Image (cartoon, rainbow, N blue to C red):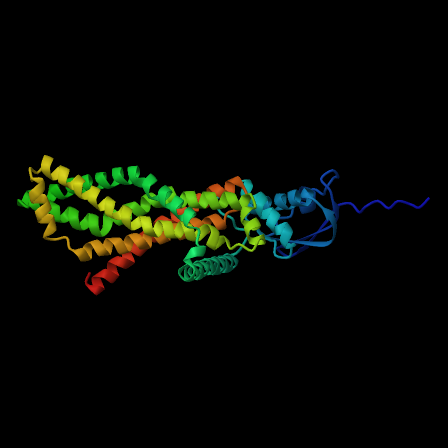
Length: 375
């Protein structure tokens, strides 16, 4: 009878060289078998840096991950550096997932030096910039195909999204816009009444709502309502491998899923902004009539002397841009979502934060450009 060879057991060796402790893993690591003890391996030493590597590592499972995680947590607590660069990429990925799911009470992770952290952040920024550029480029190419072949566009999906992001958003947009007009009117009345310029509250409300608040508040509302919905929908489809199925069939996810949403938002956003402008003006008119005793006709005539077509055009241009920003942010974060329920939630949150941030930044850019152009 042939002799049966037992698989090599899990082994770990530690070699100290000054303040550096090099830990080498080898053998077969099984969760059902015993594994080396980090405390015994450390042997009361206090290294400044712990380098982890594998050599002749046979079959392994979560046992090796638990051992490495124990070393990583010891490094976090003791303030030692933990060098994982030589570990296989698969092990690094799984170890990062374990670390993310187990929050540590250490206030600062000192396992990497400052230059390593800066380099990692720079590489991460480069990857994210490349992903965003590729996504925007695919959307532009898809828009060109839409112009050339509009009959191939999924207009039914676009109309459905227009209903969801347009008609279904009217109640919340109405409430927010009316209250913004009321708030601005009360704030302006505090100052204008001191100088007998009550009538100029109409000028304040007209310009503020038409040029800024109507488009901005509508964009913020849709960022929290529609942008998050886009991210959650696409993230859930990615988790269920529906997007992979579309790509396998040769169907572009951008053309099939993203473009109908972008077109719907770019059409409905300016209409909602104009509607928000009207409600904001009505809110200011109500305060002017109730608090300042200004008749609605006088309010309307005075507002007409300051608000021009260029002001309305500026608000509409901003609204179209904000709609594209909300759509692109929501769809991008949805396509980048992890394949899990937690990943979908993080994608929705990231979509809202990204949309609002870009809306504020773009609004500031528009303010500078319109001032230079003279609009």
